[in-house]
Image 1 (tube, rainbow, N blue to C red):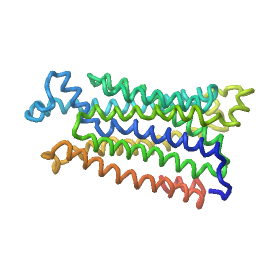
Image 2 (cartoon, helix red, strand yellow):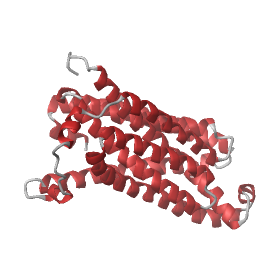
Image 3 (tube, rainbow, N blue to C red):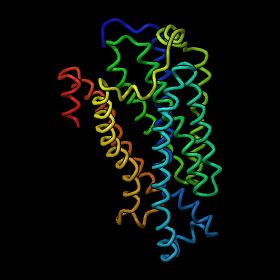
Image 4 (cartoon, one colour):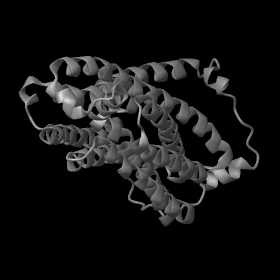
Length: 316
């Protein structure tokens, strides 16, 4: 970054956004770490059998297993759809309501509905809770990014973006460690930790003001329609951005979601105790995410060195 230090208000805005992204990662990744065990528990309850009974019956395990995989994946798919919708809706709302207010609102939404996942008794209950939580998570990404971009000087924004993305990965690591730490109890209880982000909203409301840029613009801003993104001068950029990021995110989320499930199904761990399997999943996940954090800063460095278009092409 530049030699000029950030002002206190700018540091607080960056910290607020970083915490929001970190808790996004925590609440978003908790489900991934326990998807199959938790959905198995819910499907078993619907069938009126215990998880222990499933372990003792090969036929029952196959029957319920055939349901669990598709339902667990559907819950995650709906979560990602909600994330996109939340980003669009709350991004728009942030233009009217303010960045900090929207940040606070979205954090409260995903914290509340992640916590409510503890009370799911059917798999579709969990789907609903995850969908509503994802609206908040997607909205927080939009609000947090806008807060940073409107508060920090342009010379700081590239590295700030890398820092924000690292916050998400730190949250994912926290989710992985939580599932490992709580591997001896029902997987539903990991979602209790998802309530914690609500606490940070008290600090945000007290310590982080709205960006001066937003405050000035709000007095005379005329809302731009979403269709303006597809105007002749922006259409190509919009479509290319959606297409390329869509491909990248599909690849990333396929790996993020299915890698823990693949590890759980490996022949080498079939006879392990569930707690030991969960610990292996945690260790592999943490290692991957640590490399990902390094990649965030490497990508920013390459962007500064080569230019963002060349760096994006190289890394893609």
